[in-house]
Length: 154
Image 1: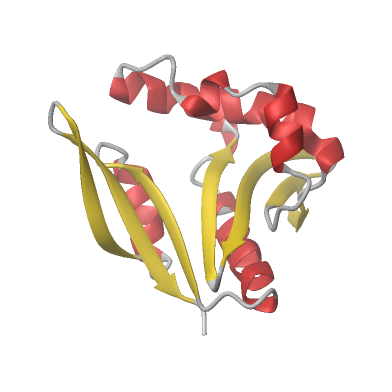
Image 2 (image 1 turned 135 degrees about the vertical axis):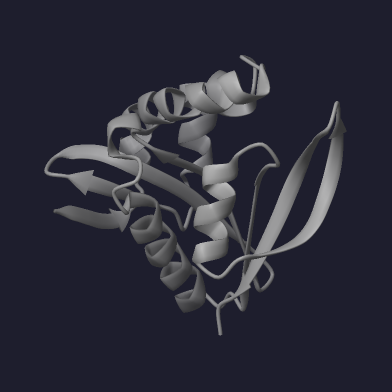
């Protein structure tokens, strides 16, 4: 059974390891081994976790999923959703999104926003299934775009 709790600064090392494992597949899809989730340092991640509304998903003591989130006015910005490769497709992403949205709503967010790449079909399916709707596409060149999606939280 998966438990979800708030992300803590002390989780940074394990979250960074998880993030790198999870984003390798994305790097292969996009042919970009230098994408930010793979090059982020431990110091950068620790700093990011000081004031964060993100959550981690645990299977026993093991962190199998993580998501970061922060408020920008009444908008909850969700990012770096990472699921352990052996746990993908098991509902971890859905549980994390639900928990992060709840934390954001409790902190005053009226809407949530996240983004993914246009080639990340599994991510797009998850977000749309969870009520997110595309609001913008930003062309990165070579037929690839960043897809921004939003969902009302109230």
